[in-house]
Amino acid sequence: MQIDVVSIFPEYLAPLELSLIGKARQDGLLDLKVHDLREFTTDRHRTVDDTPYGGGAGMVMKAEPWAQALSSIAEAGHAGEKPVLIVPSPAGERFNQALAHELAEEEQLIFACGRYEGIDERVIEWAAEHFTVRPMSLGDYVLNGGEVAVLAMVEAIVRLLPGVVGNPESLVEESHADGLLEYPVYTKPSTWRDREVPPILLSGNHGKIAQWRRHEQYRRTAARRPDLLDGFDATKLTRADRTEFSDLGYDVVDGRLHRRPDMPVNDQG
Ligand code: 6GU
View 1: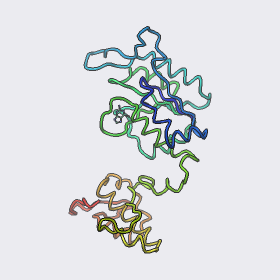
View 2 (view 1 turned 45 degrees about the vertical axis):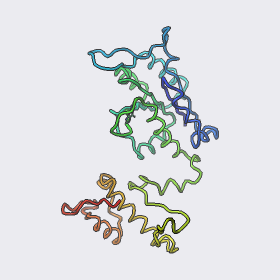
View 3 (view 1 turned 120 degrees about the vertical axis):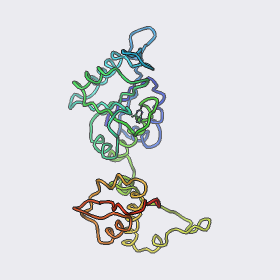
View 4 (view 1 turned 180 degrees about the horizontal axis):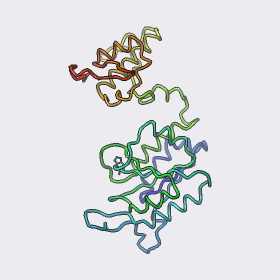
């Protein structure tokens, strides 16, 4: 996979040299380049921003340096499909694990890190002729620029590339892999400060352990992220699974979970 990141703070992306992503680059699994937007300006002051038309607070990123940067990256890339241009923005589509999987299938991703109040909207319109443009948000809060969001999205995507995570099994049993939060985990010692590991985990009964873990996933998800249960496929639940959901206040109707209105709020997650 090829990833290009454009930013006025290329040093902000230094963590992409480290750990799993740094290793993927060394191993040739990932070709990642960080570009300084100011390299694509032509004036003496290397200007990337200006005041907003219509007035208001803050500054807006000028169109031309962005067009120069993106054209240069597109020309250097493989002439195949349109590359995907991800524009981090709190006004974007919510990034999630399903999108990470989808983007991990792409040949080339380009991330355009805006700062200030954003990029001149005409760049986004122009870019749609050359790229598949995807404005994307990490969540409902505001960061100063796209760089931190890019660190998060690139990590979420790159760890899904074949060969990047040493044991691919670890991708199967993590939070969001099956639309649920992960079960709690424990390691030695079995008693720590008078706290015991749940005895079932020491039983050696792999069937019971798998069921206990699944039920912990349900409990946690119901307590912390009940919104995730709206889209949960309940058609393949066992009787024990249904009973667990019933205890949590959910009935199965037409293969979907429905919260009973009389149930007290579950805060034991
Ligand atoms: Cl992707 N960018 C910025 N600037 N702020 C954000 C965000 C992205 N996601 C959440 N807040």
